[in-house]
Length: 267
Image (tube, rainbow, N blue to C red; front, side):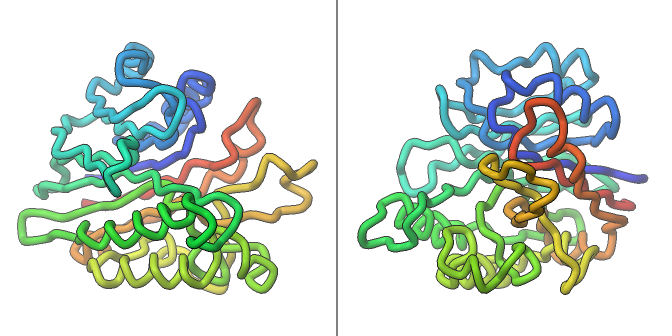
């Protein structure tokens, strides 16, 4: 069987609901993980997803900020909404589903952006981000003969040189500073996670999933970063069929500054 999973920081699910439903119509992933939905649970547009054929929804939302949702055509079971750093933010959701005879634990993350100043001593937002990544070390890639794990989301860090438009110019810019990149990669490898995007598209090829709203012409300047990620436990890695970054979605009407990423597995 073929199974597909998409991740997308939508930057307000209600504002961009037509874009989400268009994604589902065109690409029909089995599961869609959204970040930065910016709405409390009771105002989430459940019916629109049910009408699109996605009857299963797990959500951790809050008013106006943050929030994650996992939307699925296959049954999913809520496992946990973990409050990282005890901030009361809705930035994590884990669910479990079955695919190819495996019970798959799926983590959906929205890591703090970290503000503009990459100094934790003077910028509490950056301190929060570093603490969040450190706490993520507790989330490991569990696997067995009957189980596997996937971690997706907007991790707000571009860890590799080929994940940014200019490694040298962004070394002091939040999302690509050495303390962030080494922290994320250490957390990933220490937890047994495989970077599926880089498995499918190895360096030195560039991968971008985010382009700033500040650019007058995002496509012409092409100053992107890979802030969105798809990881898995080692036993799912050989089943990866492909990764698709929907760059053209950045040019849709009233777009998010992130684009969807879709992973396809041959289970």
